[in-house]
Image 1 (cartoon, rainbow, N blue to C red):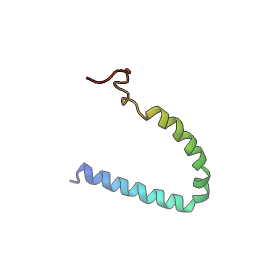
Image 2: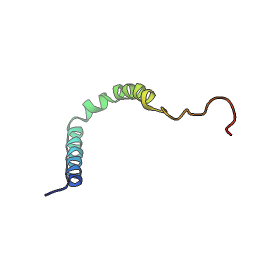
Image 3: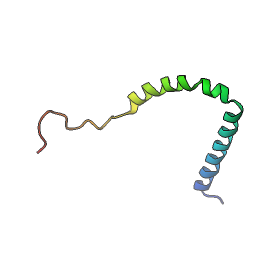
Length: 63
């Protein structure tokens, strides 16, 4: 029986191989999507960046 870590490694390797061949064949199309991916990344970074790191900003000194 193959454990779950091996399955994860095999699945990840398969995904990397498929992505490589897809990008190699369709590089022009994928390169055209980069500006849209950048625009999508901006709101996602604002949504997920920095939450929970703003504790203790009450203006006083720490004791």
